[in-house]
Length: 117
Image 1 (cartoon, rainbow, N blue to C red):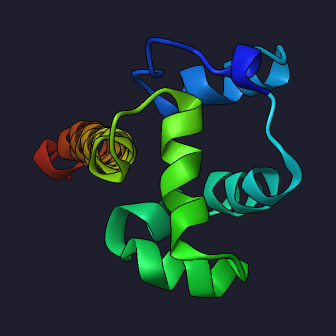
Image 2 (spheres, rainbow, N blue to C red):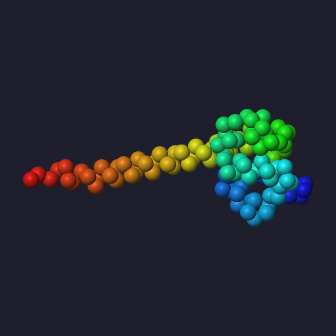
Image 3 (spheres, helix red, strand yellow):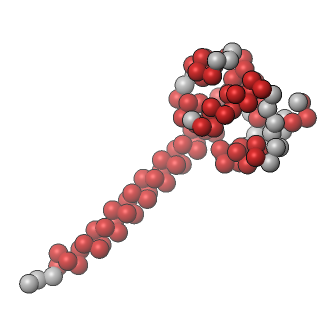
């Protein structure tokens, strides 16, 4: 499986998912087990320790670290940073959408307030 490893790690979660879908990254069984859970719940890697992730996935902590290296990261911390960045961007985007929606609502309602009977 060494030939399946990439040299430059993905910079976004979307890029990681794309590489997996295109089979640019192929996982051995144990790593695939962990990868599936992390992709389903990226907040797990962002906020839990490698030991906690290992317990949740029923694998060794070493397997969790090997997953990060298999994807192309030098350390588990680098992988965690990419996932945290992804979640931060989603959060900021969601906040911006709510602000836009609220400002749209205010602008729609404002003319009604200014009308006089």
